[in-house]
Amino acid sequence: MNTVHSCGRCGSQHLRRNGRSNGKPRYHCQSCGYYGYLWIDPTVEKAKELLVFKHHARGHSLRRIAQLTGLSRTKVTRLVRTATEPAFLSASAHE
Ligand SMILES: [Zn+2]
Image (tube, rainbow, N blue to C red; front, side):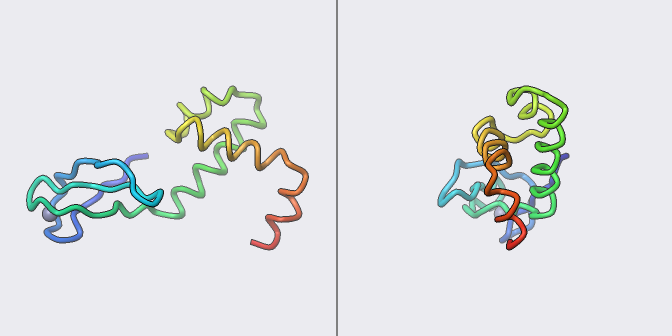
């Protein structure tokens, strides 16, 4: 699942990831030198989260799930923990 990102200023795809700020991934454009935030497709993120639950239900380890989905171990751990809490099922209906 590879998303192609382009620079918000010049449209170049020669971007380098530049860490995170406020939880959002940043990029540095190699063409014009612009610093900006990467736009993460929410539907792609949602699909990955659903995949985490699917793999977890099949009994995969958290490390394996992280490898399969491309998400970080931390994120996978958090998602699985949320999903196994009883409050999750009632709470998710309101979102
Ligand atoms: Zn640029």
